[in-house]
Length: 397
Image (tube, rainbow, N blue to C red; front, top):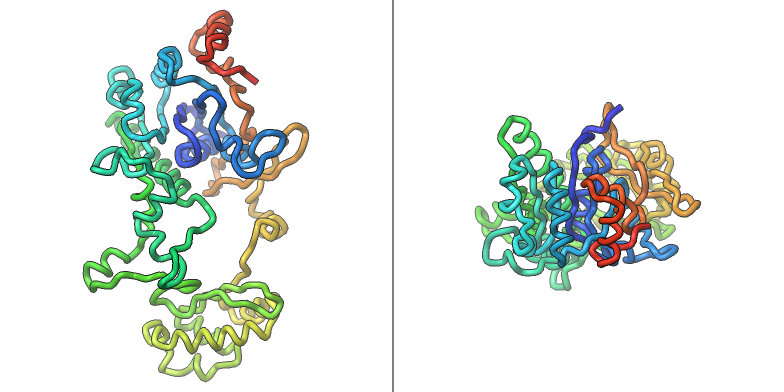
């Protein structure tokens, strides 16, 4: 059984998260991904929790990639990348705009020899516009996109979710753009540039925020654990200090919810029979649900609500997820081996019934595939040894 992207060659340039996450997804579904790292490697190899000198995050993010470390500040390193790009179907890069132009590795410089190349470019603010040359980390771009503004509580510092959402969402947009460009290429329309900006990827998540301001002069504010204009949907503390999320905002669901918590009178009242009416009574409804949850353990509350077919669920951490039978039966974890020790890493969605993706190997050591990649370009052992000796190619694992 072939993976859906088998036969495609991807050159991954850049570091950290957005570009490498896009490369990870493409490799998971079958593309050959050659990752070009600087001397010393991608910094993510050493970020957060490190075991035996390498980040556990890297083992997930670097899966299925063939790694070579080249010094792109040298003419020889850039020439090797140019040779690789001649053989590529796709390149994914997340350098600051202008860097690759200065190195002669930009789309225009490559078009003559590889007109079908799909060139995915990820940056903070895009390849054009007055902000294009600004450095754009996910944190900054999440803020300017409008996403951070609606997180947290009114009159308090906006809250950051404890994830690099801007990078991951941008990586997803890059993969989507690449697949769309492949469709055009299949129609004989050649390659093209996919221009992904971190702030625009987050802007894409803003739902009705723009038309609500333009059409009704309403600026949506932070809403804590609720969501503006939809009631009830909130997080409640149970008697065992565990948290329960309840989504009771459908009209018939609300009726069942109120019956479940002993307030059928409210559930059947015409004063609460639409979302618009419930929004007016949001404080009252949340007080009822807060009091009810405080009188129940999480397990008891869920059992009652599920009996009445009310959407609800616990707030999980990593330990909870790994122990959950549904997560495990659905195959959300894959086990790899690192230095003889097992390690679980997350599977990558979506699930394809006929041509699923899979982890073939975890993130490898720095330079693990240098010899294979350089020999594939026709270099001899003597030439490879010279590149190592001069520092153009990092020592191979």
